Image 1 (tube, rainbow, N blue to C red):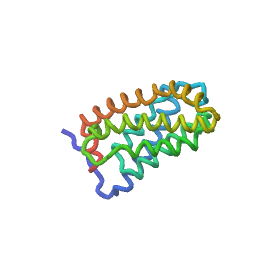
Image 2: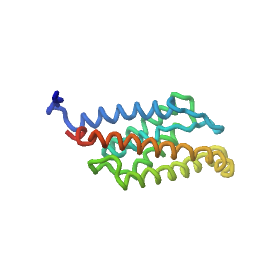
Image 3: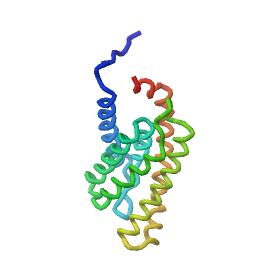
Image 4: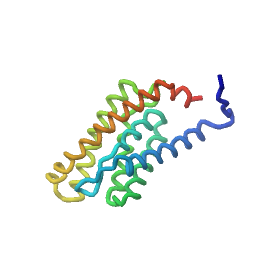
Length: 176
């Protein structure tokens, strides 16, 4: 059996920075380019929130906040959804606050409930921003109805990814 050598000289901070950068890149790709479905308001439906939830369950809070803001903001920037960059960089880190990375597992009761709550919080906050940007809360509410698909898809993808990563003991390997 082959063993994996680990470098004991690599600090936890370096590991967190590298993991945060990797997750930010994956968030950008999953948000802007994988299953990217444009909507009528200039935004789009995506599964990038699943990776944001995953980062919140793996990384400590400051790193999860940074990678969610950077990854989702870059997705809006690179896909031309310029009007959404600033709101996204504010809203996505708020979603991270629901989660905990303190368990040895990704899928915990708290993180399952958190992914449900984060979906609701995201819908409400984006609906509020749409109302401010477009000046009509009734239109924002109608446009947000399409956006309900996003948190449902992200919830499902987060649960599947979390179960798979928990099966291979990802957090124990990551914590070394």
